[in-house]
Amino acid sequence: MNKLKILHIADMHMDSAFQGLGLGKAVVRRGEQRQLLSRMAELCEKERVDLVLMSGDLLDSESSYFETGEELAASLASIKAPVFIAPGNHDYYSPRSPYARLKLPENVHIFTKNTIEQVEIKRLGLRVYGAAFTDKSSPALLTGFAAPREEGMYNILCVHGEVGAAQSKYNPITVEELASSGIHYAALGHVHKASGLQKAGETWYSWPGCPEGRGFDELGEKYVNIVELSDEGCTLTQHCIAHRRYELLKVDVSATEPLLAIHTMLPDETVRDVYRIVLTGETDQAPDLSSLQYNLSEFFFELQIKDETRIRRNVWERAGEDSLRGIFLEKLKAKYDQCSTDEERLLVEQAARWGLAALDRGEEVVTHEDK
Image 1 (cartoon, rainbow, N blue to C red):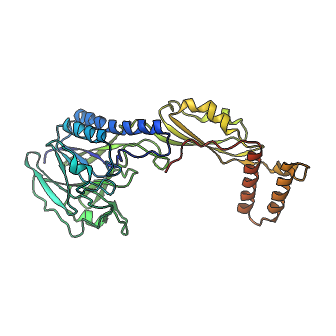
Image 2 (tube, rainbow, N blue to C red):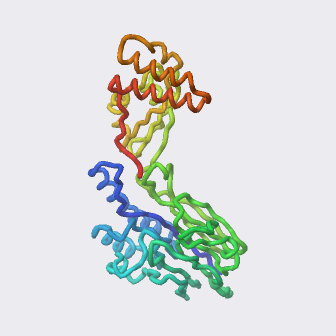
Image 3 (cartoon, helix red, strand yellow):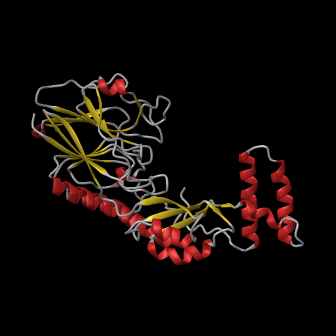
């Protein structure tokens, strides 16, 4: 069979609320999500793909912005290859969904039923099978499904679903079902961490994960997949089209002043990214998070600083002195002495640290919270 090159993308979640960001930055991030569409189209042109598979959750909900629909239609129209969309649990197909209202170009096919359908493209020698979520959940769609294999014809599957999670509400798929499906390549979506190329029997499959992180549960570089099928087998190449990354950096400040310790560990080129810096180690007093926020915020698109340091053992030295601090520490020291486990002692120490921080007005600075 001829070589077939596919761009596979899923879980864009366009028009996410970005509630953890301020209003202005949330607007910026939604605009950047729309730009992923034009970047995807540019990658299609550069790679000269034959087929585009969009495996669900392209939109975060049915309440999408007008500008997003316009950008989606324009970007897909600029792609020379056929495009297939399989709506997922966030952007499920219904008479009220944006997909039902949008006027999409002729090269785009949206699956609209919660049963497997087939579209044949003879000039490319392929059949594309797919289905849509028509509600926020979906029963298993591959149960009993098998596509007949025919010489010179690729069988491709595009669907939102979850592999290896039998109790999932989101189209649970078994490896055995994939192996017996007759499919050459299954383009899946739903899980936001990329799977890499997998194989079940004679069926290749993958999910690309989200193309750009939206919170601290989606850390690091994110990708879309370029998949090539041929008589020799299947290859997958990851391509990054993201604007920003979410990153978590833990910094031990036991032996160094916190600002210096952070600068020592901070990578280059962080200004476009969203960071959570977590301070760890033992200190004599709570770090001044307000000062750290002031000195570091210019190095990031958005910064969150969290303090997980522990007060050194001498925290109790001022217990019993004639002051509010002394009375506070004396009461906690009594509780500390009654603890029977390290875990209990750690909790009391943490309470002492937060209490001292409050007395010193060294409150925690949190300017971005993930959902």
